[in-house]
Image (cartoon, rainbow, N blue to C red; front, side, top):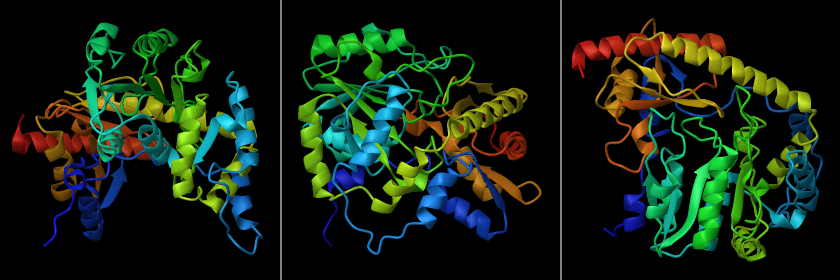
Length: 400
């Protein structure tokens, strides 16, 4: 029998979705599963987007431009202008979600055997994207005690080698919710300039910032236009994850031109989804204001309920809609699987994301889970109560 590639065999499994089959089986047994494992907002998508889909009257859903329609990119220019980012439509390449934007960026700037430096923890799929491009992720640990603030610049610089092609951060961070300060981003930008490497920043959660913190974009930093690559998406901001519309943004024309070649090879972003997302950009600001207020409430609910559970610790998120929780267990993978296979209370259980997959080490994060506070406050309270009851039962059976 022919064998698959080493690349395919060695790709890491998603910690977010790897227990999906156990969740399906639990539901088949009649168990209701509360999903705290995945960042799928439950807020309604913008009415303008839904109406655009319903009223679409073209006779053919045809190919569009490989870089995305100019009208959509012009609306994005106006959006970023409101965030003190000056762009032209030519700086923007529309992609099939932020995932494709990241893969295209890596395809454009790396060769097989190159390296990316990413502060830990990081979105698990970054490692998958890198592996698919033949690139190695060099994780630089940050600490739970610092709430996952940027590791020391000295530690980051010490990891830079002749194989390093980029520094890469997610701001706000998924999975920790940490928001990198302007000073931290400027320090990374100076490293990128000093070593003549790229600085990639995934900003898909840019709108969701709490406690008076502010978001600084990589494209607001001075002097790094040719090194900076911004990754963004419509998914979280407008509760349109299934539309799969993102973008790669840079003022580096060589990167844009190379990315366009990859974009042409896949023809175009999805036409109907792009049409809906263009309509969403016309939604009044109140839509985003309401979404931010709702996530602020859910964040407060989640933190309050989690802090009431004896024996656990919560890293307080400053942005996004995730938090990392440290549990009194040795193996959160086993615990998360056990919750779906062996635990229920009044016909209900929950699904969480084991945190080890958000770190590059084999054992780091084994005592943590990531929780996505994307359910209503009422459902969050019940889900976290299930976490408490499940933890009590699990420790009786397995200890620590």
